[in-house]
Image (cartoon, rainbow, N blue to C red; front, top):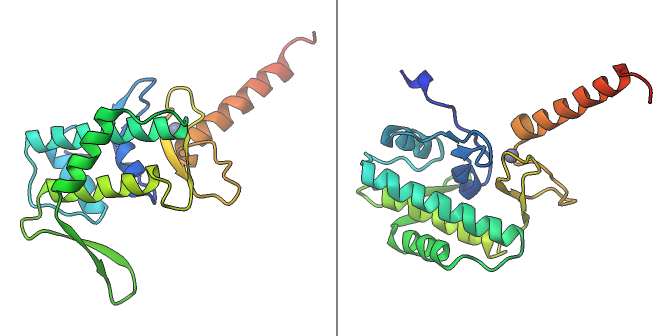
Length: 191
Ligand SMILES: [Zn+2]
């Protein structure tokens, strides 16, 4: 049954991995957390396992996701941050309860409150979004060059010249389109 749902696009930045649960926002949008259970799955693979999720909590998650997307897009364009998006991010951050845990291996792990609520997980995601939008972290917000995507991503490359949110999808498609266009030109009549 699970196979019917679109897979997840996982990156190494929590907040933008979360916004990537809706892809192709400017094309045929793909919703990757269509049900509460898929949000539970997504949180689990991102180290934020929760006990359960209601429809209302899924809506809360999507509201946060679109708020992060709006604020990160504005930040990438160096526009003023939309006030309503900032409010949602701050509310989710303030209402989540989670502790940063240092593992024996020296890694960061999030420990949600004993109730392991969706709200606690959203608090961690909101805090991650704040850390990248505020410029606290080493990297630069940018928008995917794919016209049907335009996802905000966090570029941590040394040169800060990354063009696509995801090399395996948007990047690859663009490369193929360029290749095909070149083929067409080469096989077309000389002008
Ligand atoms: Zn993209």
